[in-house]
Image (cartoon, rainbow, N blue to C red; front, side, top):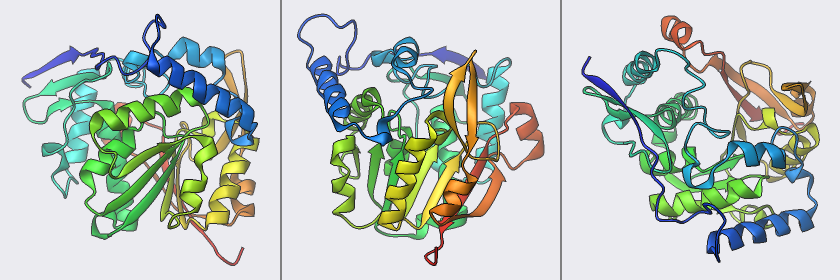
Length: 318
């Protein structure tokens, strides 16, 4: 198949904390964000899975696109990764109406593991997951046919989808990246600046949510594997905020199921789950579409993929 595998751990320009030595501006920025989040005492920043110990164990700031808490680059696909990445890329290519596989690329920056294919070039889970999510949104919301699209990403991590949408969707006007974890806010700021997409995207700290409220209401909120890793009280706070803004659509991708849930605690390595359906209904968000993230049965079986796209619509009568 003319395919090789490369692991690229590029530590880009020293823009995020490394070993914590010396007077590092990024370390100072992280300390500032941590203090601001503590003073805020917001339920939006309450933690369960993303405890300080978990973040310290999983995240290395200069390789935040490695296999870690943001994206399971190697753990997710397990054995035969080259075959699975190629199959995933082939699946995307079959519905790549905008030709994005030939436009977007993967450079391996900040430790992202990538695979080379003569047919597709460099591939990563970052790239393929983002394309899959973008095309789902286009099927259901015609995002390539829209102008002045405004998106808010709750639990945006390092800004993966923000970066890809800024490059792929011409009508994207603004993409807000929000996260209850200060380390995520820092790396997201860093990543969006590194990618040069700040004209369309911005990472906001939790005490800056008024920037969204004071602007045109978002057309869409996305939550990719984030509600499933935060406590119910935090999800309640985010849904209340979205309802108050009258955000009409909400995309949720739960962890490994078609039932949205929160994580109340981690006990013996297992998440204690609480269903979110009653909470979503209370805030007026009703399920409009639910489908496996891989529609093709054979590809889904090969990838052992059990994730679902769940698109909710706000019913104003609620």
